Amino acid sequence: MIAYRTDVKDKEGRNDIADQVKKTALSVVPRWYHVYVTDDPSLRQDIENIAYMNGASGNHENAINGVIKRMLSRSPQGSKLNNGENENGETMTDDKEYMNDNDKYRNQYKKGGS
Image: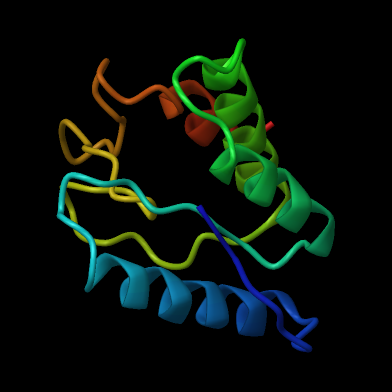
């Protein structure tokens, strides 16, 4: 999860910036990671709070999933990585561009991220 600042307001420009930030992150993390980005300043604190959680923190998985859902709904994620992966690096099963059952956010993605 990456939060960044931009002054760009138009949809295409925001998507281009998101794509650049995402690709930079993907260039330094192992390929099995999924990358989610946001330019929404209100989500920055949520991401920072997750950084301080540990395995003993109660309800940490729900907190992470909630932030990811908000990131997907509020912020562009850039372009699809390739025919096998969506914008966040989640696996797609075929040319219909549906994610496989291992990808938690497939239902939100197919619905447009609600």
